[in-house]
Image 1: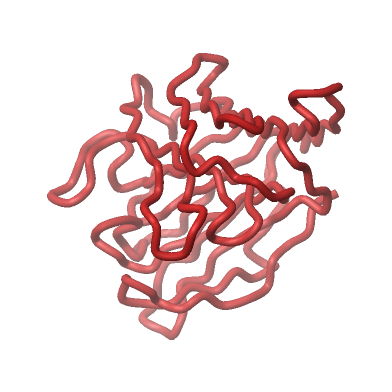
Image 2 (image 1 turned 90 degrees about the vertical axis):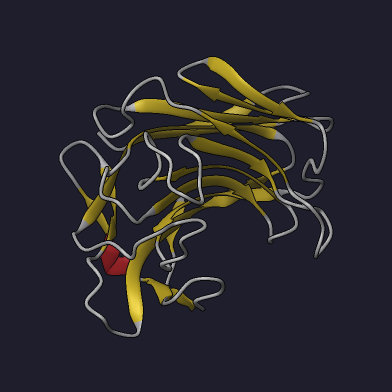
Length: 216
């Protein structure tokens, strides 16, 4: 199953904190919708996050989603067990198709550093389509030796450094903190990220087991 997050996150390198709150996870028309509210100048940018109840050590995470297209939001899908055991796809809606002065255009495939203060392993992948125009599958295959990143079944990146070593949950979130070097924003309009389906498989190097969660 999936659980809905309910907790605040400090501003960090950005200008405003964000708050993952349950009411920002909604059922849409054939999709599970993750919402970031338009920022109203208050204490938080209200955001959304869900996590799998199941953990896995190695596996495959496959998410069919349509990006919101509203500038100023980070959309992430992860294998996650803490900031130093994480592999993720992250879409930055401000720079999906056109870079800024500080962030190149594209989507990011990353293994976070295994040690606090270490250097992450990351690559920027330019889009050859508009991620807000239709649904696409974003996939991470995680084995003991590597993480491999796919879009619509086509391999886009592979990392052999900082490969997560601990069993992890699947995690999906949308948020903004106004950081010009990452999420940008905060958004001035309501942002809705649509998730059509989630597949999470475990034991990728052994017998593959998994469950499909289709929100249709």
